[in-house]
Image 1 (cartoon, rainbow, N blue to C red):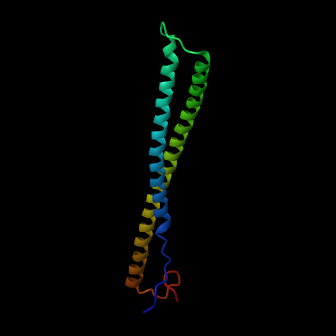
Image 2 (image 1 turned 60 degrees about the vertical axis):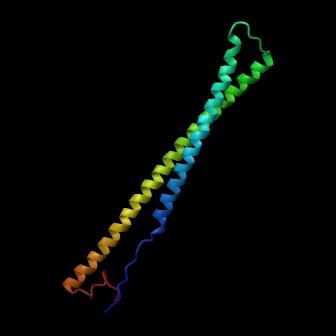
Image 3 (image 1 turned 90 degrees about the vertical axis):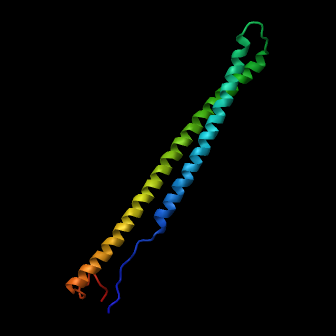
Length: 134
């Protein structure tokens, strides 16, 4: 009996893609938590800035300027964390879905490989150079 020579695609590329997709999702969750933390600090600074507007409150001008600058910095940081979260979510989705699709193609390839072998054995075409190694 002749030996079959079929190349089987590696199982690792799609597994690695799926693992990296899950890592991206974990990083997305962490990034969203950072985004919320910055948003809370930003809200606290805004609340502190609005406090002197109430009657009878006295605050130094230098302290108010510092709070305004930190509010602007926190706004920029909040925007950056939101962009990072979006980018990581998109990357994770692409990697995870891409790995899942590649796993499906690998499974399809293996199914077709055995179908070719079964049909060749049924038709007794063992001398076909495209199917079997000579």
